[in-house]
Length: 449
Picture 1: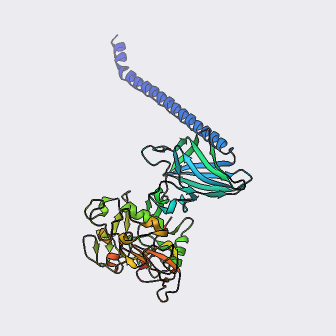
Picture 2 (picture 1 turned 30 degrees about the vertical axis):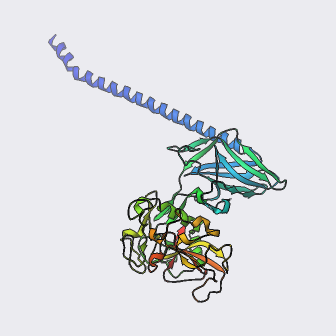
Picture 3 (picture 1 turned 90 degrees about the vertical axis):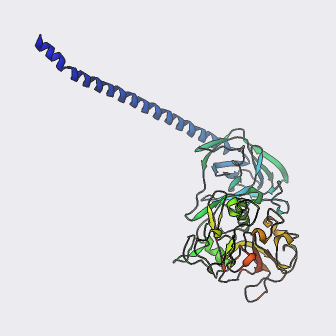
């Protein structure tokens, strides 16, 4: 009996080990089942999403005369690949999502956008109405971006935290060219399924939020004035020699050479930047929007908003040389340091319609009585002058100069001011008296995409 008792006691630890093993086996089985269930659920969800995608694509690509071949959301844009399935040229007059008629733009690979297909009356950025026109021939395919679909407090499209989203109430406003029939509407009866994504920018570039009031979409911009690397390529970096002595033609070519969608900053894009930074308190010397002065940077004058620096300053040490976007990203020497080319052009040899008025040389912005072809360029507060750090505008009725001869009627735009511009420099500063062949040591450029 003692022996049996000893044997029973000896089995105690063994049974505990057996119990632990059985527990682990059961736990493992439960975990395995859980994994299988989760995997199956995920597979079902993925399969359902795939089926929805196929159904959405099949439906929208079957419509006529406008087929939707592809759809995705990029930032605030609904990007569509559309095809004219009819036998006549059609004009897309607008794309509506929900209750909003959205401005439309050409869309290119790499998430870049061309100038809008839309116009506002007298190019007035405060005018809510607009007219759009995109011509698409029979069988042609166009890729377009409808801007503003997910902006505002009640967006028509919800991509927050999603990889894809369903979009209801998408409709096209169009006209048929050959028949003269206008004000037609094509509205889908089923939701459109679109992937959700975001535009990416190169290193040392910033993403500038678009502004539909100015008919400018989101774009990437060099954070620094362009440098010429050892291979003759325009780069954005915080050090190195700034690319100067470059004329307007070469500035455009240098930006285009970077690849598809790259371009010399458009004048409208410049104005979107300055309107954005003017609404950031940190860019004002009082930290109050509209009070005091915007930071001007290297203009040859030492003050609370500017400094007398190198010619030009290739560094980033002075705090007045940086402006912050609403996204908190920084742009260096956008005001002062170097005059920078934009794509802006006025063709005129007199004080005629395209030229702002009065044609009195370099004046304060509050003295402009007619912005004419650059109505989009007026400051948000008509009373602002160089005292607010916006710079001045040149309105010259004479021929444009290439630095030697003033015999040209093509007036190209230089913006921002340079190290020797004094109070003429500023975020809105504009010189129009130079022809596209003009070069100087204080003239550079900046690329966008």
